[in-house]
Image 1: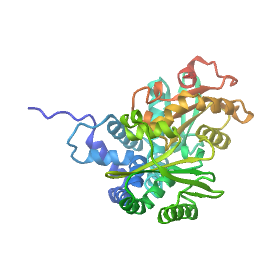
Image 2: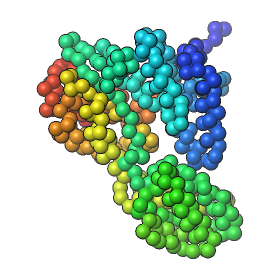
Image 3: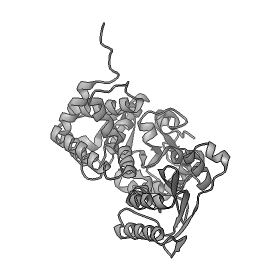
Image 4: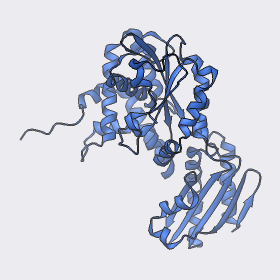
Length: 398
């Protein structure tokens, strides 16, 4: 019997690791594993953030199941990186090597590079010639696409959804892991179902270590003193019995909690049968992820485009979950902020703004991912807005 053909090229994966440097790659895998072992919630967050790297590493091993669509996408983009490295000149290869080194250092990920590669693939599939002008020539934009006599510059950029949140999900993960031991010890002497509601008026950011430590101490003190509330200008804490309607409980705890506290709430559940402790936090204002995207557009437009050709700003919205990503699209928040940006004088060189997320990068189907692989918003005021040759890259998708 012939061996079944794999849906990815394992030799290309090994070539990618060689390109990165096997010692560097293995050190990065060990670092991610070590950091993820620090706490259950932090570990979950890190495994999501480094999903591309971990998918490649899983495929290099012996999977006992068929690879997922997301894993196959990661493998294909890794193969694309290897092929691109072979096609570039010496300076281009050096810049690509720098991109890979940055991706595997500190808080870096493969997302920026793989977003660039995927954007190039999208434009090729639409019939455009694609040149990696940023890598090859050091241009401020990343890609130069062409169709017929028309050319357009594409600048790829990544903006974290955390920039639009007062309460950062990374900080919330660290806080809930910090208090986990105290919560479990408290539940041992206080059986039942409990809810700690938190309104964080001044937000919560992992970078602000003092704020994170102070919130940890406040929760610890509330549990130790068997208090019911702790209020100040920074936050309001309420400890009370957890009460959910039976119909909600039947639907599943996390679904019920999401229904109860809304899509922007930060939730954490600690279970020690028969007891349950739920933490639910909200910021003092609604998240402004789409606003953060607009602000990022405004901050990069002058530096990333030459102004001599139509320009496309291809944005990748990182650190967002499925519910949030669909909400940003369904409520037209990204469209509204993108069009507000395009109406500004600074956006004159921009013919279109595109937005994508991990759900498009990993090849998820609609409605989880946007149709055609991205959201597109055309600038009707641009002189080339109606050029038929550019339409596949700039025509609005909504």
